[in-house]
Length: 296
Image 1: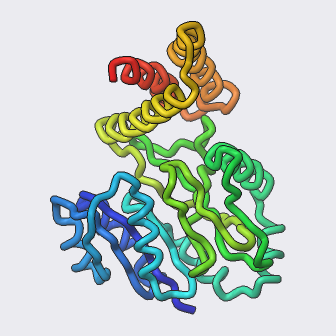
Image 2: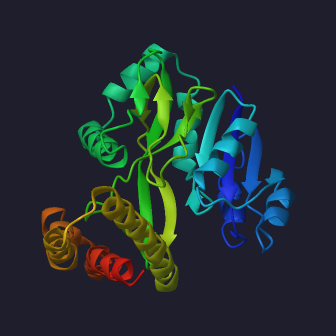
């Protein structure tokens, strides 16, 4: 059964080689859609045996992800970000899974060791990322057509296993023609025609190996929050009183509640100083976003 690897890139020369290398022996073809990188990303991907399509670097990056998916010819597609890595255990699990019948997949899913954790996380992600509007799974097809992969996020020299970070499930393994990205929102969840399952082994996410990279990614996320605030305020024409209430919520209430929720409720403290740093910067992003919004 042919398995394709789909990656969308922009200036990922430091990560693309390791990403592709981690899938050696697992995938049958590699498709990279590059958003006109100014570094050697496209060249390196080509050297690694990928079919490279160079296109515009669009603000809605999911458009290039979907383009990579559409260019794949395999019956199954593994869609990765350039900073993600497939472990040997995960590769073996994927090989075994793709040889199963739908009934065997169903039995496999029911026997997952962390099934309850995965299902609870999936429900939270679906509710948050679809804003209760889009439904990421439709049952027009009763077979398994997509799988969530739990991710281990590498943060400042270690992995975050608490603080609401794990399992950080993402749909990464899909049957061709049965799942797609709507390309409407940066936080959207892939829509699936059929059933979704989970794999047991984690995908490694080199999210923030350095503090500089973390701050850069954090700043981009803050920019998205600012855009959400602009849309909300323009849509509802918030009064001065409501504006003051909202400002207090974003500058004081949200940061404090988020910090203690991640650190205590979600046991981020068990990740040591990394958990504290993650909780702190995750909480003050609301304050920083609102300040940027006011100044814009």
